Length: 429
Image 1: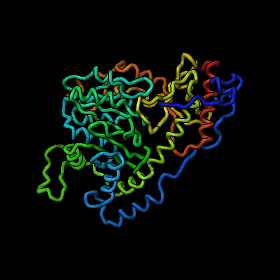
Image 2: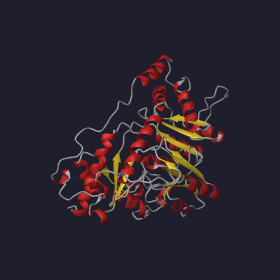
Image 3: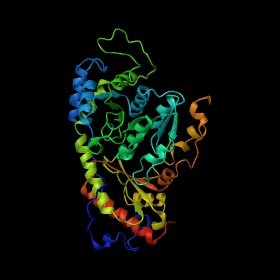
């Protein structure tokens, strides 16, 4: 990430520390943040107009209405992809991608251990084996070197997760996938609006998968979109979201030729998402500005590792991840997060808690009633990805919203500096 010169605040802030007598709220001082963070109404007249038009069609089925088709056309134009197929969730987008890619029982798919289960559920449902590669320590995204070390003849795809809206090293991943003739699929669930070397994420791999969940940058409650430039994959993706039924007007029969899910998006979802898409550039621009400025102001602050983009990446900032350095601050992530919350700053420690492969569904191989799934032959245990485990141990996640104000930024900076300064001279209990 390219930052401007260090923030030139008051002298007490320039050194990155506060006097020990300036007690944080958790030690008896007054909270810095005493007003609510900015919040904007998410849905409004634009969504209502689109919904009314959808209702007036007298059909809510995607193949007979206009809204889902309009959304797909608009999203394809937004990303520059040839084909965009709407579906019911980000998870279903990933599953459709794996189906279209031909991922089959016994295949291996390499992905990150710091992600949502929505990334790995589809791999298991295809009978394939999730293989977890370590991450780069600052971007917290897949390390191409760690991925390449795990590639073997059973590897059929790499699932690159743009965590927190921060694009992976897509050039590095694409090069190794091309070299080994395996497919690169992008999980863009948290990164809609992010760009890599000027191009929207989701367009460097063979397939890009997006989420329209209620808690993402834009939303229709639940929904997803999957994009590709490949005509064959585009056709298979359409079938993969609709039970492999061919609903093209000139199709003689619609007899399925492969197993697929019912992952259709309704016209109501499409209508809301269409209105939301028109707001996306404004949303991501405001998030970028706020987080870029926070990064600039906190740069050089001892005791914290700030988030950094991979070369060429322009994050859309779904959240802002910091990593505590206990050897410099005498506080762990839990203590640091608790102190910031006492100041009124919305943070949480450890993100997902532990690496995905430490969940019982992996360590106990309990995804299915019988243990004859291919992944049962793979050993999942603590220690597989030491960098990812350390990141989760030390990380503190700051929630981000495009409605956050300059005053929110000032308070956040002051709170972080106060807590860091306090713990640098007053070890956490």
